[in-house]
Length: 289
Image (cartoon, rainbow, N blue to C red):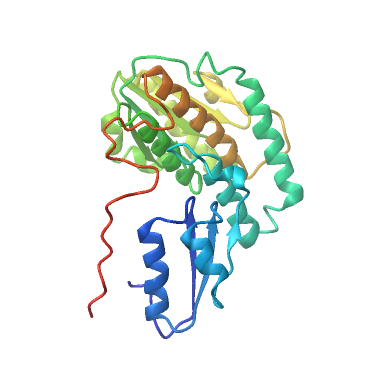
């Protein structure tokens, strides 16, 4: 509510795969209620969803509809999240993400899928780990968060997943690392930030507490090569927001294969039915001043 200031124009950007989540729809209505000059940009994968349908019938909204193929039928968001992410960047950072530059990203992601073959060997191997930690700096922390969520969703919590920044991780959260923990470090392509990522990578390996510490990077170095690592397929220099798409390819594939390895059904991993593709049972409370 702190951002709904009636004295200032507002652009509300809504992301929704189905576009039918009650909270998303209510947020739009609440913003319209409080801000006279309120505009909306819903980015959604479902033409039949409430976010899209409400927007196309509104004078203060413009809907950005993703290709129908991105409306994932499975539980976890995969192509939907990466496509909505790319579309948002194309709108707000067109000098960085555009049809020409993103072709390189798409080609690199395709090369990653090809390199993984039939996925039988797993992305990070198979081991009896009980925890996984994804680490990323700056914008890559967002990729780390999404990566952790995919594992949590598709394994129905059987594999506990965490995320953090490399610089923040050593300030307490590193306490969770034990001999049943897999740590994955998304190494930044920015030369300054990369130094901090590599420092923590070396530290974690030196600690020798984790079952495995894996680095994913665009280019190798002595520190990266000193332990398990994945080097992205060759391409031009990518900035971190471009690399995020590549890192997510590995993370999504790992989550899928880990789900199958644990005997889950990836499209409906929650055996209890308490977690659903589109949230259920949400109560929208009317605003009372």
